[in-house]
Image (spheres, rainbow, N blue to C red):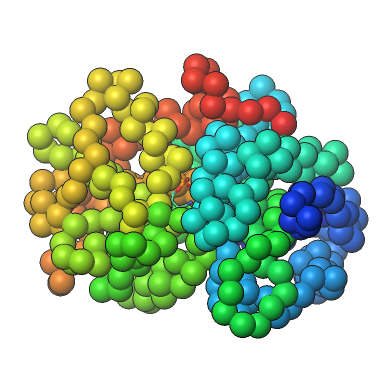
Length: 360
Ligand code: PMP
């Protein structure tokens, strides 16, 4: 199971009030991690469930009624030399503030975002809630590695009329997470759904965007695929991204191509990092439009990128009944190199020469 709703005991809450963001750390009911592991499934489920309840918050609000909210996702990773470190939290802080501004909310300051992320991980770890580094993870390039997933999100204030949120809550929860795409299957299908349109919210990490993603992904899984890929809504021709990941194609010409950002694609932090790492390796990277036809005919490797996905190969892409298989169904050399590099930096196996890791 990739994600389990098993929030760690310490959560963060701040409600924008009188122009300020007051800080609150809430300690939810818990036993030690070992005691919890030894509990019956029922008892543990009850305990975990109680951690996800916040009785003093309004149920009827602009988020629950109209999907007006945004979120972030980042990881604190167990380090080879001990401790935990977070991958580029400054980038998530900036994207969160941009998302909030895009939704006309008061932006949450970057400094508070960083503090809340670091502090929740630190406080949970002090209670014993953190994953331990295992050298066995190195064997499969951290595909089976565990980490702490940090989920900052907004919840609007109470209200029932269609409205914007001027006094949102910002919450930060931590939850253990393992590999996202662990099924071993990595075939993808082009969805007939439209995730984002120009002048919409595709560039924002808005909760509402994920309704289409969830519908398309569940259809893909039902049809036997691991992931779905969206085309642009205007021409239905150019590849945009996956359900919760960006996408790269390594062409036979030797160029690594990823769709250029606009207002319909989420600017992924992993995407940005991979572009930089690939360029450092001397690979020609292009951010440009890539049509589904070009991708299916010209790509020799394909992978998706994201906090959850890391750099995960797609073995094939199916569109209108046609299937393009990349690299004879094997993970390609460049994909392996990129995955090893980014995972190596994230788990402290490779030196962090770019200063991307922030120690907890
Ligand atoms: N696109 C979408 C729609 C996503 O949800 C995500 C995950 N945040 C990404 C791309 C990848 O972004 P990142 O690398 O910052 O996780």
